[in-house]
Image 1 (cartoon, rainbow, N blue to C red):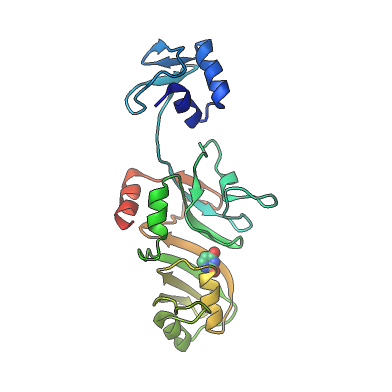
Image 2 (cartoon, rainbow, N blue to C red):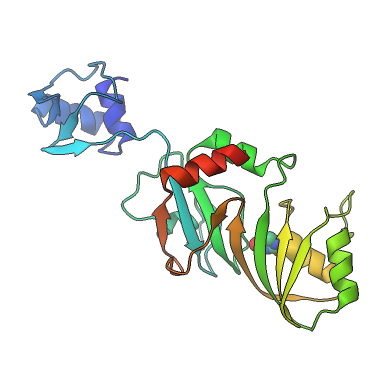
Length: 233
Ligand code: URA
């Protein structure tokens, strides 16, 4: 990769800014100042420093975010705060949320620039499990649980795939679904005569929301977590 491209990908500055930094001698490659803007480097093995700080190249980035309510799942929005605004000191180029949680839904959201993995995880054929903790306006009975577990008509061409329901109490459930249709959980509960009053995604495939990750907080995935997701996809 060209040195100036490497530096822009690392979000050190715009293409013209990084060229100026290179010419000023602020960039070192393997311990020597490099003033050649189109110098070709091996981004995986060459050591590049900017103003003395080493830049570590990582092509793909993976974050788990505990999305708060009131924030929209988008890369930009004219009106509302977006999930991307919550990521601070992060190289944002190419990063995007994988799938979407409604503005009033909270919980686990994966954010990555690994488009191929995102595409696979969202593919309807992959049936990646998503677990939601759902608070309901009314208590739910065995009949409705059986309907959700069998698949319900939410107005699309097909019934929803069979879901799994675990009761927490008579108006709170854990619902596991294998698809990601628009407003799916809310529409499923509406189809059985109930209403969602609070929704939180607890897990997405092999990823689980841990107690320590506060609302609005995020962290990078571990190598092991990334490998497990790739095995799903
Ligand atoms: N289902 C919904 O209805 N809303 C969400 O945000 C996620 C799943």
